[in-house]
Amino acid sequence: MPQYNQDYIQKKLQEELETTHLDVQDLSDGCGAKFHALIVTPKFEGVALLQRHRMVNEILKTELESIHAFNYKTLTPEQWEKQNASSASKKDMKCEGLCKTNSS
Image 1: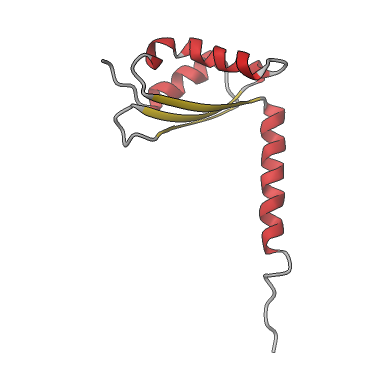
Image 2: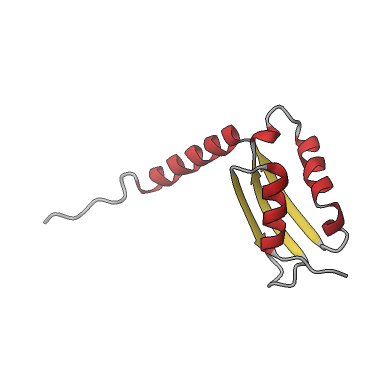
């Protein structure tokens, strides 16, 4: 059974989906059995979530026969930007009012 690494999966998805952002992580300590991916591409625009997943599954059809677990999130560039903007504003709010210096 072939083993796949993070770089291989990332390169294949990048080439096939022309991603604008791609983060692939090997969660199996390097043995290639479990991966997580965040995939952002304009090719997902106007495409239902199920169809996006089918696109990814088709691209990795051969690899998924030997990968034990592959979980992933598929976003359009617009969804990615909204998610990042939302996350950034939440992080900024955490410290609001708490980070005052004591000027005695």
